[in-house]
Image 1: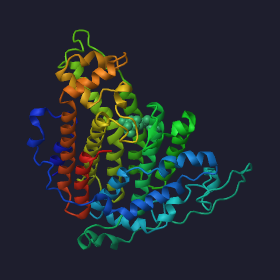
Image 2: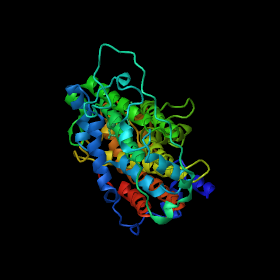
Image 3: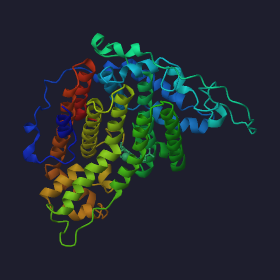
Length: 448
Ligand code: FPP
Ligand code: MG
């Protein structure tokens, strides 16, 4: 079983046209279940949204306004949805589920929902006042008085009887744990923090139909508030009390930055292979770099968020579930970004809440341009100079339009989405699994 999932779930390279989606073992078709993935966890998603603003509360009204700016203009909540559905689809399956379930009912990090807000040390050591959690954080005091802290409560030992119950057999989807709910909030916070940075880098005028944060508050405040959100997400992550989930999620921020840097890299010509030759090693490298940066900047958060959800639900090493979660999130994330890159070409007007055709203007050669290069060698020099000469953007756009670039990028996205759906077969049937399957189709069909 494991070899099957790994073989089919981790392919990174663009599938050749001859291997098109039709030759994939199962295809994306209209026979997919009609489950609405968002409806399955609608109450949890609205709770997450409400709680997020509370988690971000600060005593500084200006900072408060910027940090909550993107949360008050809600996202699609795709990342929290993914965490919640993977939690539901895998809870009760892993070896350590009884332990995680038992721990969630104890008053300790990772335990009862309220204890996730407990400071890890004296409240004034954190010195990060959140008026929304006044009993857990304190206002800055110029004096720091030395006093003996209360003795920590003795850690409870789980009774051995917890391992004898088989909840999975009783209910098809055991409930989502408080730690998994908090994880869903953390991934949304990291996503929002990355957008606060991204809108500075991309000089985006709009986000979700409103002024972008840098436009509304200026670059410095946008970056500082992005870092603040990231700081709060880090504390919330530490309070989960699970070192594997902490390591996974902490590594995402580095991945996001790596992805952005990779995206800025020039595609350099090779001494004996001019860029005009689209079959060159340079073109192959350009594809590898494009897909790698797509993983880093978009899919990593989804893949590691999904994997962490399975970890928090007690899925252990040597079991397939963490691998399924990761492979699902990774393939889905790449499909999501490929569709995003297609929509950038299709957005003539302001359908995405941002101007269309932004990628070429930013000098970025995404899937449609890379495919168009195969048909129109004159695209090579444009890519190399990042469409910076007058008329380059318009010429590149017309070359893409004349080529099958957009269509082929969509096909590639479908292939990734199909892989994402296929790996779910390693999980038992459940409503949540049907929701995850339906989500792959939503990603492909999305128009914004
Ligand atoms: C949106 O992509 C941007 C991302 C998915 C990641 C951005 C990451 C960074 C700026 C690195 C720094 C992050 C942190 C947390 C320190 P896009 O520009 O293709 O999509 P868009 O059209 O929605 O802007
Ligand atoms: Mg952007």
